[in-house]
Image 1 (cartoon, rainbow, N blue to C red):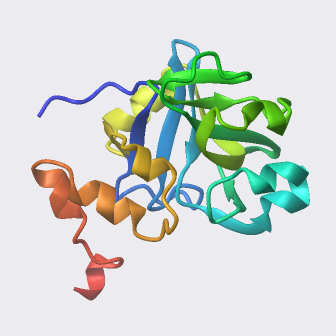
Image 2 (image 1 turned 90 degrees about the vertical axis):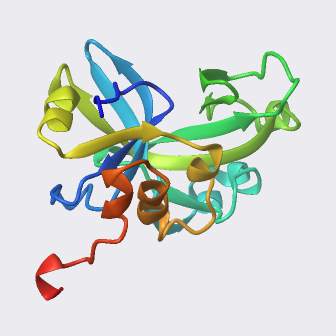
Length: 187
């Protein structure tokens, strides 16, 4: 199987060998990939902090659970909103498409302008970032698997088994990893 190139809208799934505590068993949605680097958000790290406590009225708009997700270790005092645009609605204010209807929503946009133009929304505190060629090097080292994303991955209510479920649907040897025990030495 030839390696898949990382592109916006793809997932990075942490390999079992990736032991960085920021990324163990993580699933990252890539938002931007270019020669200067890559940027994404970790999909399976919900916090206990309600969105409404930090971003007021955005708490009424976000997908359940209505909490901030820990998007990554970089700029944790900032927030990124990933949204799914409503089909057939053109020119959603503050929306920048990543892949088809999936994109980033500017949180400076008044919520009343977003009503009816976005079907789903999740907000992430911080992001995961890589410098030029850094992500390619980590993929070559075997730290990440690059796989296609499904919209359901991004807006999943219970993210506890997201890593296993994404791995399970992959072809060949990747699906095998979904059954690995947390600690192979105990096997």
